[in-house]
Image 1 (cartoon, rainbow, N blue to C red):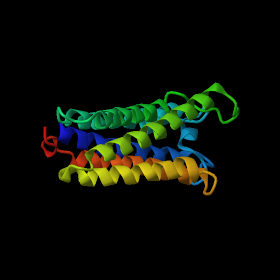
Image 2: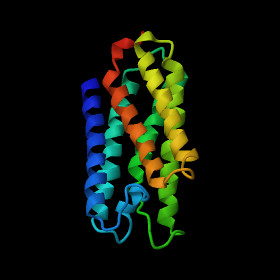
Image 3: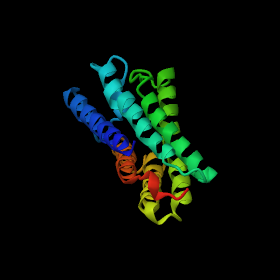
Image 4: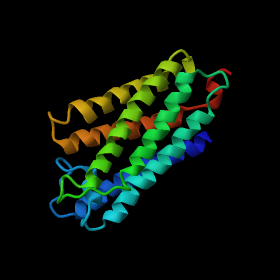
Length: 201
């Protein structure tokens, strides 16, 4: 299960990165600094369906599978905060995938798709930040999982900072990409180091 989680985490990160770089490089005028990822999957944008699939839906689904392995590795005596934290983390992966199911409309800022996409984005980072902090709090007392606790806390703070507070201070494309990078980095590190036997039952 943990090997599968590691493979899924790696695949999710590579598929998303390849989609962002590949589709971004062929879209005329697209800037990785100023434009959001969702624009690559926007209405009337060439290859939008393919980007939404490979940029959001597949990576989000793979991430959900990887994170679910953490739930499977929890001891029977695990506290409620740990279990709820992992459930919120799975929800964040589902919300990431959902961003590919609602295309934004670059020509109409008030379009319903733009609002739904923003809701999915907001749910993604709120679920991740709260889930990662709950997970970090609940596993901090286990010596074998202290690395994951620190990684989870650092990733939660980074995502919160760049998804919420840094958006007005630096270009939105940069702040969004740092938040996503922190999420994928957390996914790779936590699933790589998870061990079912590391937590006493």
